[in-house]
Image 1 (cartoon, rainbow, N blue to C red):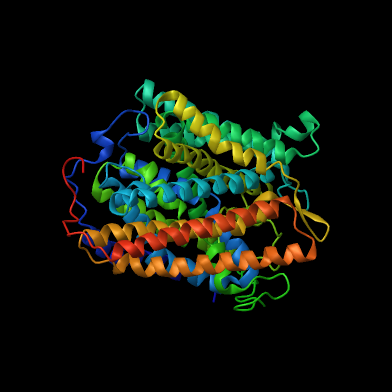
Image 2 (cartoon, rainbow, N blue to C red):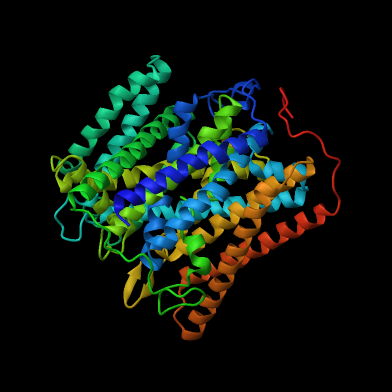
Length: 580
């Protein structure tokens, strides 16, 4: 198979799925453009603010995508080969991830833009609701840990193993300028009435300037402070950013930064396609990575994990991700202008993310031996694509820095969105209100990550393993388990309203099976470390969370099974014009 055929088949399959299966799902959910959405009914300028689908899609897309469809596919392709990863990305996005995203968004909109946990409370019981909220909060904390550390690693690493490109501090500078531009853009739109189109015409070119300025004003935090662990220092700086960003009005940073970040994603998609096509036609880009690896199906092959079930928890974003349900029911549902916008924003956004994951696969497919770091592998691939797409006009070094900035940008979108969403969850869980409640919930959310990123690193073969890598499998497992539980909540909602559950029940059972299987493997691995005397504090924290998540998940499944035996009289699934 050629690279061009690979992308063409990927695009065609996803487009057909959107047109056919997306229409089936929209009809099943009875989406109605005439219904007044919570964004209008509860408009407050802080969290509830209606946005057109052309404005909301890039924001939602950048929030759900982040580094997930980059890191996961690259790791999976390295472990198992690009073919198994490709199959899971396409089928998972169409029949599981897309269904998950769309149904959780609609469920939230039909319940006054409350979280998916509130849907669980309404159709299950308060005990299930509290368990689900706690599970969501723990999962969000894991997202913050993983993505903060991988971004911090980007800011302290070289952009290429040959040290030929701008270093991480240059990307840090460009990232800071990007965030400043986002705030200025938000102020101009809010205070001076600058329209969306004009704002994008002004500020997108300024972001390009920020990329060009970065190498000339590198911000090396390690050199400035003399810290022996600059990555940990950056971790805490990023967590500080999360605190302030999560407490700011959505119009000030989240919406403008999300819009700019969304266009970064669009640029990556376009550049990836053009670079692949031009490089493929010229013969300069070919598939050199193996389609399948030496991984075994059900057992470890040395350090290579088994394909089943690790493939399905390594690739989350890009195929199916529980984090999407929190974004959909946390921030997106509070900004949805019309119910019918749910299909392009949620289902379309998931399929677009799937295509981005396919482009991430290409960055591995063109390399005989990836660097081992997903951010650098991705940046190297983007550099090749951009160089090919511009017929060599854009230097590889500049293109590589652009790739790293894109990577950092995507993570910024997720970091503060995660912190904001975790604040929502804790406020629901505790009943806190007002500014004191908002600040306290945000501080509690960031306290755990602040401690974990400072722990001594795990060692493998005498080399330190970064926190994000040590926690990635558990992050993937908890993320996918959250997807299974969100689908379970939606299934209960549909069933207790007398509707068919087959669109969500199958994905629920599959994701439950893969994630629980993965947790069993995690327990076995930890017991092996204990026996060998190689377990460190990071591993103990990981094991504790594994046991906690497994217990909570089994409890929720048990609650759902008990409720299935006491059906509620069915009523209509159709939306109501006023609050439910």
